[in-house]
Length: 578
Ligand code: FES
Image 1: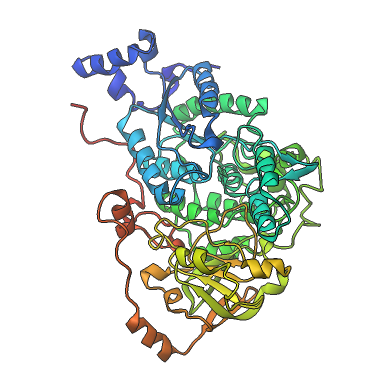
Image 2: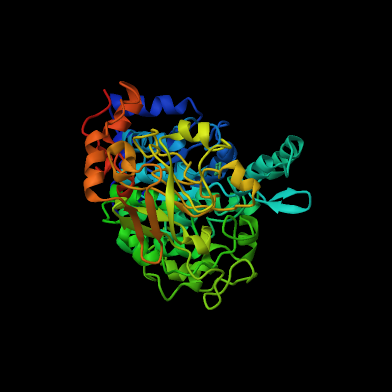
């Protein structure tokens, strides 16, 4: 199993640190030896960085110290030299104002940590939503051999005889509390029953979607997406990833050989087939931007929109990730859509994606339906355009109400999130079930940070009347665990002077999902008049990360990376340590 360093066809970059016979070599080795590393471990074997997003403030990743240990064991099995290193973690449930404000900061942390240290290959430990794209982005800009290991979903939530899903039931319970169908004691009971094991959200939310993207892109080993966090096979997968990354270094199998245009197209199609989160759109656009693959919003519509949704999981369906894994997991989905995908796309195990999945067996067709009898006819993301979203907006049809997908209504406008909180439940609010709710200033610059508030709750007075969905339009994102007829990522955002900023109460808005249209029925002259009156709001901060972010962040249609971070500069360092 173990490979001698001589089996690498190329000189390893770690040799520049540990293979030296001078003062610097002494310094590099000596301080590492204080961790009990024997001298013979500096013999030129591949040095593997294990990039860990462990944090107790990121509950979804709180088991990562143990996972890292299994990766270390695998690296040692294969004759490598593991070095675990931390990066900033992003916990969806605690961080304010939103983890998305910090995704690019973590990507910078990852990129610079990799480049500055003597790593030949990288294992990325990723789980809670933003940790996955942040690590992929940072690593892509360095382009070393890299393998992704996801932390795995929690076990199914179980509450009073029913399966409950993380996130999805938070929205349901919140509505039930508003209508009086549930009291606070019930809520406390439910919260204990929802998160009952290590792992990330076990619905097909953003974490599970992004773990699926890791596998579909070829960046993770087969079955990476769905093995529950506490299943022993997650530990085995981690160990196998540790073994495999050493071989990838020997083969010089870099990220850029895996993250090709074909790989991104496969991932978009798989996102449609799993009914994945709308957040995957911005994250994949950003990762593609880092590795140098041209990907656009229109690729999402063209490749994903018509893809049948095969996976009957919350929030669009009934089951949860544990069921998905027992049914066969993502390999079954990819095999089912085999006629669409690029079968020759290479994956981290050195095999093609098709070789990895062609023999996958479906053990439960209620959870993963055959492509001939899909769970929903379309699972992908629709890209809407029109004078309200000249650079696009997105909607997830599988999570929307069919009769609202063609709808005209009068706008009820909320200028920002505070305005929404102040007035949405006001009994005097002039709103009915046909109104279109518009929320401004929740985009990348506006909030700041592009939060998941686009699926905001309906007015209490309408919920009490039994209204379950309304068209909502914003420049925000939506939690992957959420549902509803929600138009998101409207670009340009209101804070950047997009047309969304010009919408007023009572304006007529038309949504036509089949025709990909989002129209504001207000004359050009009137819009021009309103534009002259529009004033940009004052900056959120005059220092630090928030200032850098607001000054340089790209819009949703470009992946919301910082403009100067797009692209890659490899792993070379211009100068030595001292
Ligand atoms: Fe971490 Fe949902 S809160 S994945």
